Amino acid sequence: MRKGVAVLGSLLALGLCLALPKLVSSYRLLTYTRFLLLALTAQGWNFIGGYTGYAAFGNVAYFGIGAYTTGLLMLGRWHVPFFPALAAGALVSGAVAILLGLPILRLKGHYFAIATLGVAEALAQVADNWDSVTEGSTGIDLPIRSDGEFFYYTALGFVILGVLCTAWFSRSKLGYGCVAIREDQDAARMLGIDTTLYKGLAYALSAVFAAVAGGITAYQNVHVTPGDFFQIDYTLEMIIATIIGGAGTVAGPVLGAAIYQLLSTYVWGRFLELHPTVLGLIIVLFIVFLPRGLMTVVGRRRATGERRFRASDLLANVRAHRVT
Amino acid sequence: MSSGELGQIVVNAVLLSGILALVALGFSLVWGIMNIVNLAHGAFIVLGAYVTFFLHELLHIDPFLSIPVSMLVLFTLGWILQRGLVNQVIRAPLLATFLLTFGLELLIVNLINFFFKADLRSVTTGYSGAGLTLGPARIPYARLGALAVSMVLVAALAWFLKSTRTGRAIRATGMDIDAARLTGVKVAAVYASTFAIGAAMAGAAGSLLSMIVPFDPNLGGTYTQRAFAICVLGGLGNVANVVLGAAVYAFVDVFVGASWPSLSRAVTFAILVILLIFRPQGIAGKPA
Image 1 (cartoon, rainbow over the protein chains, first blue to last red):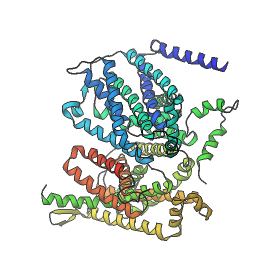
Image 2: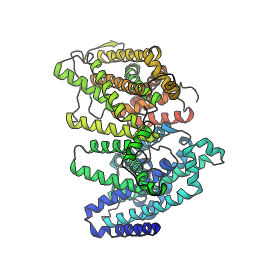
Image 3: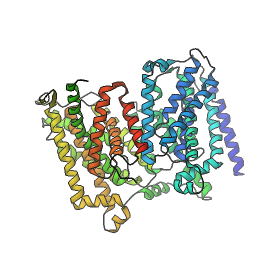
Image 4: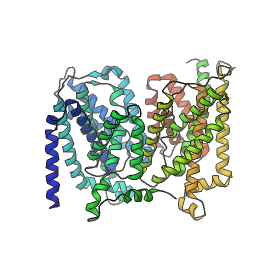
């Protein structure tokens, strides 16, 4: 019975998503597309940050690599069509992630975070200075395609693919291995899990998702510059979205991205000048009251039978994590 | 690179390392004791700079004399933020405190931007342009004074942590929180004072920076990153490591900046990442 309701709900949501471009203005559709692209990067980050527990702070590097590879292949002498170029960008990103991941995935905690941040910073400067390929800070211009629905449906398709992929991942040997690494890496190795391989695969998977989002964004924005496509804000947004929704859950990144985009758009409209203040406040409140994300509110009913989430649980969250 | 330029580069590196040591020390204290990477550290630096700026602009107080005031202001703010917010999530997963302090940084910097505008400001005194000449190199008095104040504060903190009761309680809590609690240390109060001392150090660094570089509300972010890099270089643990890390970082930064200006950040970060891979415990740190 409950399962039937869930299936029906998903079908309704899917139908609504498919019909959306016919219902809203093209400007609104842009906002929804941005939400889907954010969800895609968050889904990617969820593999390494959520399931494997590695605080990757440089995923924007793969967003940028995806954007540049897709763009450069579509231009100049090759004139590759969009989807093959996008796939190539994803492959290049995944390969770079494996190569970089081998040394830096040996680091733990804060050290891993800063190493990934460093890699992203370094790649941004490389893109800025490698004039013969990337045209430096001037950037490259892709063929123009001003078809909002195309980008919306492309992004929607990949997000649905991402949900299926995450659902598979969370039930696969790979996923269980990554969770084991998150909980206790040494114990995981004792159980015979090839930790280097598993971490590398999770990292590469997150890079592939970021690259696809980057490629789509590049095609949509037409103009690609290092300043725009390597900014740390993208990394932060995907992390915040995942945390708000619930790291290490299937639906968390999409839910979090929706909430983040909703709040961000609303706040932009209302408090233009104080936008970062309000955003900062939202992050602080979420972290204090729901450090494990919204999915703890939604998922609780199934875990503990009939008990619904109560407001008092917010305070219980605080009580559980404070030091007195 | 002529020997004159080289001399100036060395002088600049030495002068820079003092303030960097002060910045990194507060950061490393909070990281080492509470396991919090405080991304709002840079925002505290900016607040310190504004305290000195307004005391000088409105009341004509010499910037060196306003350092205690900005330290007191930041100490109080740090205490309140720790008790009110940071302490509530301190046992949550690592990423929670990371994002919490990131949110705080966003909030503080944007509020400063909103109230004081993004104008580039600087504190200019009668002796701002003056300096002494040492061979081919010039040493401005303000920078020399900043170096002296930094060294005094670093030494004072080292003495405080080593020799006072509170300092020992802080170190004990950092080593083993449960054992410290068993011996009667009030852990929550220790955490609050640790965070507050870190903020006060940032405030002092901000006051000093306001005299030697023009600043705007976004000054802090680069200093948070530098503090992080220095802690990684030196390793956490004791004051001497941080000072050593700051000196190494200052030299690398100044030399790379003079040789490859457009790639300076890439080179600095590349060195950092390579170092992390081969010596994750830092240059001076002991193997874990």
